[in-house]
Image (cartoon, rainbow, N blue to C red; front, side, top):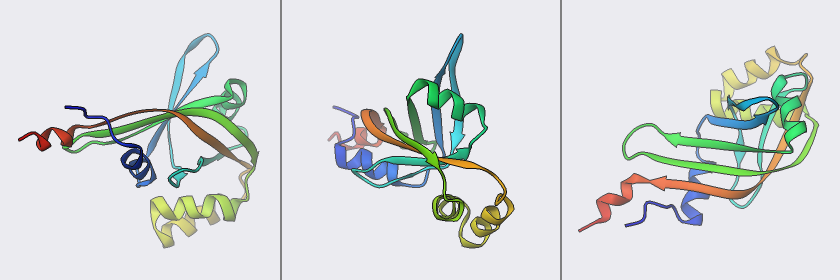
Length: 145
């Protein structure tokens, strides 16, 4: 029995609401792992917004690629890990880029409050095209009869 997700399953799982764990290589040390809010639509790019001056922004620019892992922490356990190259790192439109992501994670009211509270922050929008996938859906074991 394979626990691997199909392409449709993995893309739907990644598109669901999860806090992502971003992994990016760092010179002279192990990879850096950081939580992120992100957006993804099946077949598209994974995007997130970060502070322009954040250490992760510098590491991402240097590495040119990163990995994001998302998981379901309740049985049946599931995860999707996706790696890819950075398509672009560009100045973010605070309301247009961060707004939908903040509302996705915090809801309309708290998301809008978050966007207002962080209005003075210089941010970048990071876009990644998924290339390599690793997945598991341990609920598939229940399919054995």
